[in-house]
Amino acid sequence: MAPLSYSQPSACGEEAEGFKCPEIQDIIVVGEGHSAWGQFNVIGRVRPCDGFVSFLKEYVEGDRGQWLYRGYLVGSINGSLTGRWRDTLSLPGANGYEGCFVMSRRRMTESYTDFWI
Image (cartoon, rainbow, N blue to C red; front, side, top):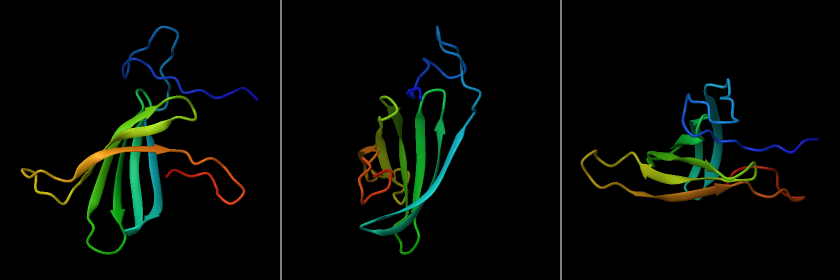
């Protein structure tokens, strides 16, 4: 089996030398998870032309609001997602809660399945 690799063009909609733009226009991500704050649902997208990711996390119960994660795919097929998160409860003119994140694929072991952390 041939190894997989992630190729990133220089700009959306433009072909870089030796790289043909993918025919995939958008990648939609839907999922669910659990954190110390409880169960949540995730919806988002990945822009294939430059690896930009945008996810909205919304908790199922309680008044924890929605959280926006924006960043880029970094590295090869075993790379990670890196970027910034921000709450959506803060008023537009106020300084909201914001920080950085890195997500990587957990290595497969006998007791875990493959998922993002």
